[in-house]
Length: 212
Image 1 (tube, helix red, strand yellow):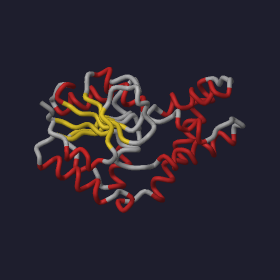
Image 2 (tube, rainbow, N blue to C red; image 1 turned 90 degrees about the vertical axis):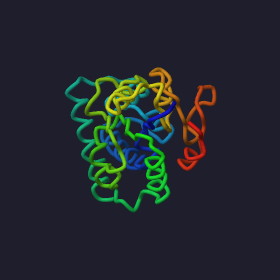
Image 3 (cartoon, rainbow, N blue to C red; image 1 turned 135 degrees about the vertical axis):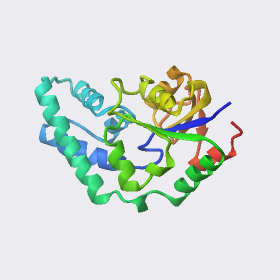
Image 4 (cartoon, rainbow, N blue to C red; image 1 turned 90 degrees about the horizontal axis):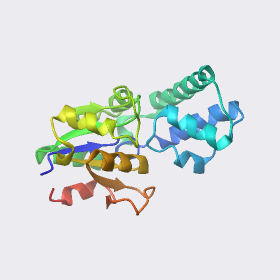
């Protein structure tokens, strides 16, 4: 019996993909690294550090750890600036809040399971924090998706087993993480391979139609 629903944050509840892309693009241009929107799709759902490793592999170059940390800090500073300047409660569709409220009224426990270390800032800026019983984010884990750690942590905070939880994701890494963790995965969007065993949904409203 499903008792909890764990949501990825970016791409499911909020949409800051463009801010990520623009921040990465600005930094990679500075360091003369090739980066485009197609490559950006490979970064969905993974940590900032792993995102950098992907781009370095694509460019077939290496950096020492000091260079990596410098670049990562520059990227995050730019991204946070975008969040503080542009991210407001109004950017979240009213239907998102209505779905979250309805799910809580139905008795489900709700959690965030996000690899982003900026999760607290995003939830604060969008005023979504009150909807959730637990927050599991990049500040609490050692391994990013497709490792299931962030979802296992969320389930633990809800005092539920993975078998009692649904995970809602928009990226393949997140779907794989949910499967590996023993969760029921729901996928939203078009970036997930149909070969993976998950339940596709077109919007969060579809969650209200399932008899868990």
